Image 1 (spheres, rainbow, N blue to C red):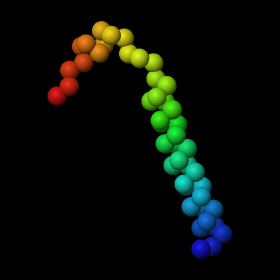
Image 2: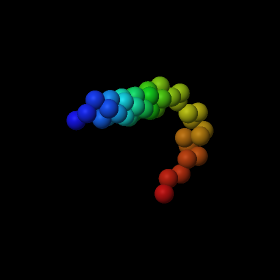
Image 3: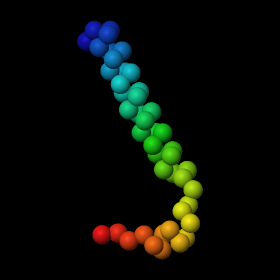
Image 4: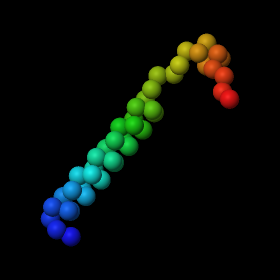
Length: 44
């Protein structure tokens, strides 16, 4: 593999891992919804 290919692969991998970590952080640190919103939520 060439140096350009290796750099491209590492950058794309870092982007995907960073985006995944940011998404998990956003979901796990989200505030709890108010109780009335949970009671009114109806799933299929």
